View 1 (cartoon, rainbow, N blue to C red):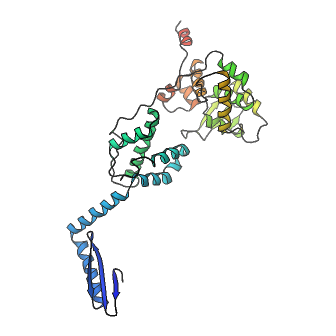
View 2: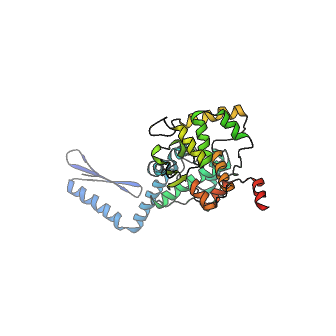
Amino acid sequence: MKNITKRGKYSYRVRVYVNGSTETETFDTLKDAQIWRDMKKARIALDPDKQQISNARIKQREAKSSTLLKAIERYEKEVTPKKKGAKVELTRTNKLKKTSIAKKSIYAIHPSDVLEVLDEIGFSENNKRKYASLISHIFKTAKQEWRMNVHNPVAGEITLPSNGKARDRRLKEGELEQLEKLLTGQLKQYLRLAIETGMRRSELLNLTWDQVDLKKVTIWLTDTKNGESRAVPLSTKARLALEELKGLDKTKIFTMTPFQLRKGWEKVRTQLNLGDLRIHDLRHEATSRFFEKGLNVIEAASITGHKSLTMLKRYTHLNPTDLAKKLD
């Protein structure tokens, strides 16, 4: 009885959707109604011109309903959870869902739309670059994984914003001594380990005692930002810092949260009037010190976990005075 409704005791009405319009016919018997319905559908299926028209209209409806917003929501469910930085990416996708192009069809987004939305998002050039990369990956996923016939409006279409100037803030003379004098407890040992190991903030705060091998004087990291495991050698100062942290917890080396670390750091930074010195600058400091101690690129990268020379260079700012001494 699909597409057929009974009208009164002896009539049967057939309603068939054909190429965007509805065709109806009434019959005295159910059998006649069924034959007409089936013949009508068969003719549509066999007629290539009508089939093309039908497919075109289906694609038009799909194009109208397939908004960037829907693509972002699917991306959040299927792609984002697999990433190491899923939490950070979700903040970006949530912001992207509120922009002007979110309601546009994914088939109708042009490079000019992307440039407009990057200006809408604003902030630094580096921040815009991250959003441009996210949009590009959503389109790449739609095309390669979801088999959607979309055109990427970012890749090869727009000039990506600058990656931003690499920070060159290092500890100035006397600043380390000031910090060590004012910092106490876990904050003090965090400072020492950060400078001695070059480890990332997340790597240090998530560190557990079973990752530390004092006999082999190494820390073994498995859950890293780039997904690759690495061994971090421990200097004498790093080992002393770990000794100071024993007894806080049976499992974790640091019990403070990222929020507590940041608040404690900002308080001391303000007291010492250290300007824009950030926690992450300690990784810059450590990387630069590795080279100043005579380590080569391969040795330094094996400790810090940088996958490319370009990224390692961004984190390295050598002291020109020390370099001058090497020239004599």
